[in-house]
Length: 196
Ligand SMILES: [Zn+2]
Image 1 (spheres, rainbow, N blue to C red):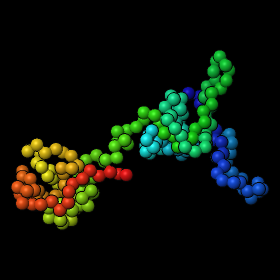
Image 2 (image 1 turned 180 degrees about the vertical axis):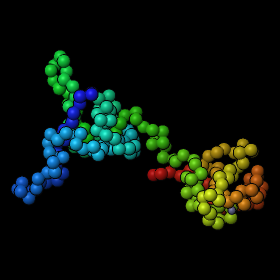
Image 3 (image 1 turned 90 degrees about the horizontal axis):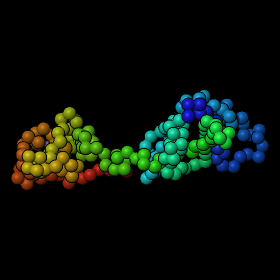
Image 4 (image 1 turned 45 degrees about the vertical axis):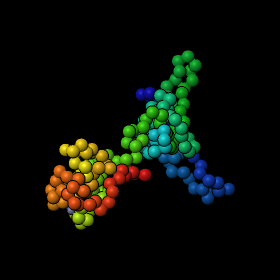
């Protein structure tokens, strides 16, 4: 596809005015036949097959998805026409019509399928609103720690449901004990957050 070129096909949204005068001229980059190379910022939205947004992609990347048959479904009217190479047997030039929103088959990233954010201290402190879940005071994130409610040394897991934000003081006071053993009840039950 080294010689592929693309042309924009204007997509008319909504009814057009009766007279062309009132419509005004289209900007040059949206004239039919405009080369996409003049539209370096043109991006299409890539979704995974579940409809979750993955990222913006260039029309070249989108073309690869179409050419590989990796497009699960699309949204919107085709907005770009991409001309590929000429078939030696048929003499026909291949043409792809790209859509503004493209869901890719088998293109899902694990974190796109799982709405739970990765368990980092930053995400943990954000979930707990920068509060120590033992003393209830608010701290800067540099003064917070990740406390394992059921201590790791006692078989506790490093999971969202077993970690809370704790200030240095409370964390060291709790030590290798459960909240019950330490007599330090939690102010909230830790939970698995979701971006959605
Ligand atoms: Zn505390």
